[in-house]
Amino acid sequence: MKSVAIEARDLWFSYAGPPVLEDVNLTIHEGAFLAVIGPNGGGKTTLVKLILGILKPDRGEILVFGKHPHRVSHLVGYVPQDTHINREFPISAMDVALMGRLSGAGGKFRYSGQDRELTREALEQMGMWKYRNRRIGDLSGGQIQRVFIARALAAQPRILIMDEPTSSVDTQGQTELYEFLKELNKTMTIVIVTHDISVLHTYIESVACVAQTLHFHDRGEITPEMMEKAYPCAVELLAHGIPHRVLADHEDKS
Amino acid sequence: MIEALQFEFMRNALIAGVLASIACGVIGAYVVVNRIVFISGGIAHASYGGIGLAFFFGFAPLLGAMGFSLLIALIIALVTLHQKHRADTIIGVLWAVGMALGVILIDLTPGYNVDLMSYLFGSILTVPRQDLFIMGGLDLLICITVIVFYRNFLALSYDEEFARVRGVPVRALYVVLLTMTALSVVMIIRVVGLILVIALLTIPPYVSERHCGSLMGMMVLSTIISMFCVITGLFLSYSFNLTSGATIIMTAAAVFFASTLWNLVRGALKA
Image 1 (cartoon, each protein chain N blue to C red):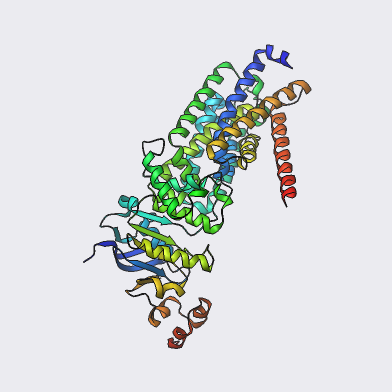
Image 2: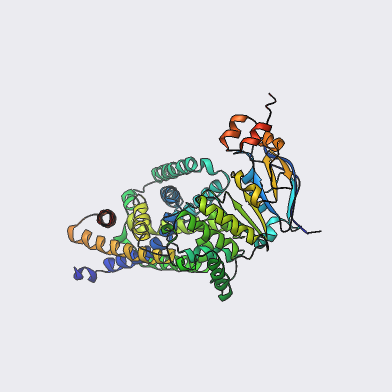
């Protein structure tokens, strides 16, 4: 039996309004490769922020390795969706990646030799070491994403969480990215938030479909029931680019 | 122009300008990259309420401005952290109310006709000696804070959410940042006045940004540009008998336009 990486119990959350997440229960085992899918505004990013400890649940609890998320933040690597933040910012790729080595307020003024060594390894792993002195804004979206992944890996996390990882890379880049994540999955738990359902079958082991409530499926497929929950009308299904066979299975109940 | 230096007021003005430039360059860099220009403007204008309080109750205006602007900075920090979507409106309100409070309190102060202009446009030529020590002390405090928390402030400025995930105490640092901004603003008011503070706080960092590879580099370069503007402006105002604060700002504006023009020309040549 593998140990539990992330566990949510009776989780409720709202932003000063109707609940965004309702009675969510979820168990992610260590070594999983999980995709979180669902409609826009369905609560995917909210769930990620709860796992990261940026948000606190209204009711219920969320535990990462059996502890409150902010206590184990050093075990979780996070890659945000937006690679276009602050492109004018005067900072090198190396300095961005080094941020992965921050932990708490820290008494140290400087990064240690070990911090730099681990950051170098992470940048090399992502093929970005040669760009370390480039200004971040001079890199392409895909390259910035690689720096962001290196920044997450520099922390030596046991869980890697990526928000919409395919939004800033082309088709070729997507395949490479997923091949890389598959390799990485041998040593760590991976959670990705995605709209891109086309890759699910090949790479993903389990799917959590979030649309206010959560539906968990422990195989890399989407069932018609999940689709109905996530994308309640056929137009939405088409708009989200679902393969035809799923459409055929889908019966509109209304 | 060297003969101007024989006057003590001119020497003090130069030292005040250099000391204010350090705060300008360091904090201005944070103000620009964190996009808190409007907040700094709010703090600067609202601080006039503190000057009014100081005159009405009879204590040092510098102390009044400092205390009041720190209070405003704290309120703005809380509002920005808890009610982000309406923060700009509330800053606008504090901006106006602070100034109105200052004007009314000075109206009510019996037998005192304060030179309002010196606070609005600066009075660098009348900086007393003890103020130089206060300014130096504030510079030292700001520089030590920035050096100790450099990595944390960098993470906060570049990617606040990621900083939070890494356990950086983002909220506390944000309060510290606005506190340092308030202290710097009060110091710069001495030099160019509260209306022109924004220009000196933003032009040098803005000009520096694209020429620097790091935030620290940006701080150093904008401090140098700021010193250049203050010293040049001061001598121009002495030579042509112009208001010093406004002349300093016009020098900074000239640097701003020259830099923008240079970037346009360079961009056109590259294309």
